[in-house]
Image (tube, rainbow, N blue to C red):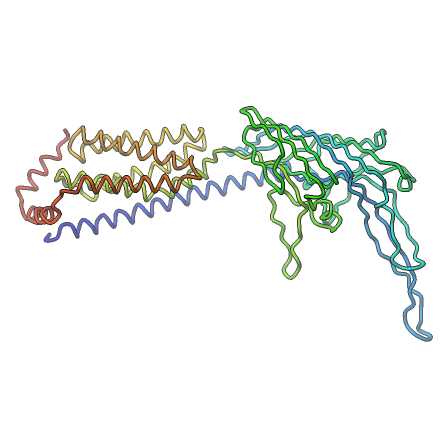
Length: 474
């Protein structure tokens, strides 16, 4: 062949395209496994309970107003009774909650889903019940109201394991609450007859045990709301509209406290405006042509895994092509400096070993912790490439240097995976270091002389005979 570099460049281009396809296939596998994890999460949520939002207690009272209107004229004139129904809410002046959550992991096959059991005590106080007194909108109308009821709403009522309500120092019967278009489901307790006309303060205490999965949120509907939450999960992710005022995270769990005023939160106003109590992880949608339903403000915590093997594996495969390119650069540099010939098939085999690492990583991480999976996969691939490199580069020392370089790349990749915030700068520094190394090593190389030598060697049968002898194992 008159221009051997052109043919080799074409062959290496084909090898690179093949490896790009292989890396894309690995990425598709990672995405498929992530999809199966989400299916497992939905399966557990369908059987147990979804992520939970808690609102209350609030006092509510359903009322109706009836009035007569005249319709028609002359002999067709008639009296018609019209009616409107409405609900009045009274948010507590002070709402204090203490809760303790214990994680209860659930499994679907090899997939682990973080469930939790929450035991909470809610104490609420109302100065008066003036907000539950109805107002006429029509002169001469007749007003009728039911007895006030204390309402506690949750986003998924299936998670309610037990509930006890104490009103004015007396325990009241707890009844299932009807489904509300905005608040969802929950439970309620009816106040005594005539309580709406009382002028004194009203106090209530609720003991609640609630189960859910993945995350918990609380709606600060009181004029002042305080929540103290403890849990045995050492990796909390605090979210929602308000972060905790105080928090302490240890290796065995966390403790967090929120203090929210009605001056800072619109949760109480959102409740009165009919906004929805949404799940922490839910996206509220609406039918086409109708306004989107808004959510009541909440704050809370997610019981998230700090190291998701699928997220890290997906991020690792994104560096796959760069990883392969750096290795090929190292092999090509040795090939040029030592006047060796490395066949495109050998490049392909090295690239396959590098690509297989990512598949090993995702498969092992489903059964063992991610650091151990990464160590096993990188160790196996490094050992294989060290052994193969000793033959390709025709020397044990060269093979050891090659394997050591691959090991350093695996170490750099692991640092990039863990340092998400500084991954860009670390990756850029790594690329600059590689480029500087190539420039320093090849600074005195006569590229024209090298090309002429390779072109002449392409017609020298004796050269290929010597090269064949040199490929013998060291």
